[in-house]
Length: 147
Ligand code: DQA
Image (cartoon, rainbow, N blue to C red; front, top):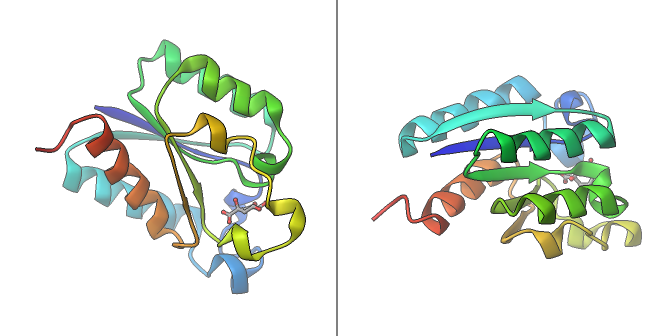
C-alpha cells in the first residue's frame, strides 16, 4: 500500500514557527518519524509540502493518477478557507485523514471551520507530530491492511 503525506502552508517552518504551539521538531524530523512508522507498518510513503493552494490540489489529483491508497493531510490554514482543496479530496475519492498538530478546537474561532473534514474519513487533532503516525495506522486499518 502506498500513501501520500501531504502538508500545507508554513509546515515547512516547523521548529521555527510558534514553537509553543507546534513544538521544536522540524519538517525533516516529521518526515523521519513518519518514515519509521511506515517501515513498521510495511507501507510506502511519499511526502509533499506546499505553501500554494493550487499545488496542493495538483498533488491530490496526482495521487489519483498514481493510484495512491490513502492520504494523510494537514491542509494547515487552507483547512479553514479552501473549498477547492476540499473538492479535490472529494473528487479523487482517496481515503484521507485530516491531521492537525495543535488542538484546533481550543483555538481561535476562525479555526473552528474545516472544509476538509466532510471529505475526510477521520480527523486527528492535538497529538503533535505523533498524529501523522496515528493517521497512517488508521488508514492501514481502514483499508484492511492489518489483520
Ligand atoms: C494546523 C492548524 C491550522 O489552524 C494552522 O493554520 C496551521 C497548522 C495544525 O497543524 O495544528 O498552519 O493545521
